[in-house]
Image (cartoon, rainbow, N blue to C red):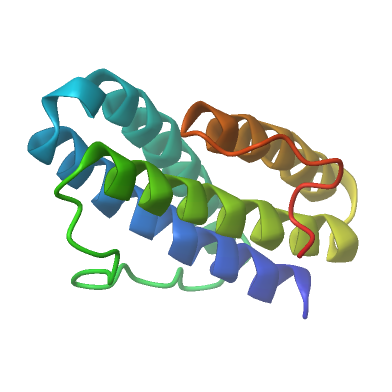
Amino acid sequence: MTPTEALQAWLALEHEAVWLYPVVGARLDALRDRATTSFEAHRDVRDDLVVRLRTRGVEPVSAALGYAVGPLTTADEARAASRSLEDRVCAAVLTLAGTAEGDVRELAVTALRTSALAAQVWGAAPTAFPGLP
């Protein structure tokens, strides 16, 4: 996978996060603040990735119309969907860190740490090597 392909894969997950967290916040009052914080963080990353890709002369991948995340009717379901998403972001940025150089690699390593911590906020157990299966 090239760094550009890895950036696109990461961007696709950021689109999903920007879709998921408002749904979580709207459906579950108890998780609204956490979902809002997550939404804002992922929105900022998404916007940065779009700029980075366009700077490379690449058309950024578009968001899907919706995502298959389950019913999200309970806090446990919402936490599970959020953990899954953050884990997938960890895997995507780990892939990018392995293919990129310079500031893009630094961005990926920072994002790996951020997503691993976000997964823990949503209830994931800490892992020694975030992003690995």
